[in-house]
Image 1: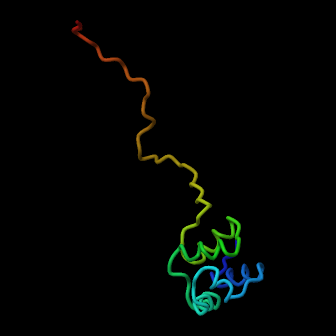
Image 2: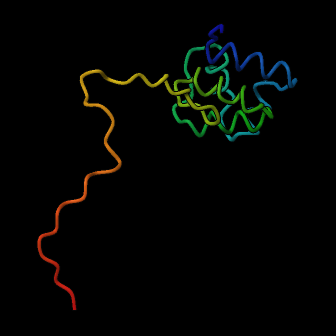
Image 3: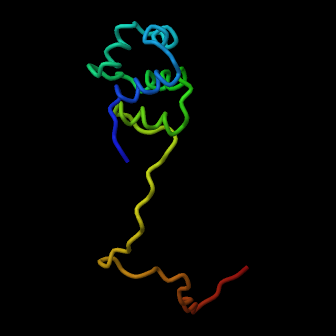
Length: 111
């Protein structure tokens, strides 16, 4: 899978939606210069919530939201890493027995 920068993805998604830097800035409550810096790759959003505002404004799918978050340096919102295949550690003892022998009871006390 190809890896794109935050700026490349942002430009692509904005172009796809036909949204200008000024429009996006107004939609998410940021200065146009801030969006311009993101757009040119000079900076990335400082907070994850800023990226999520962008994804909402651009109506991004879950997959595209995750791509933009990861490109900005944040954890994905929707996808989770697949666990590695379990490999037993040979240094550990075998399985724990589920049925243990009953201890001998020498004396029984009851009421």
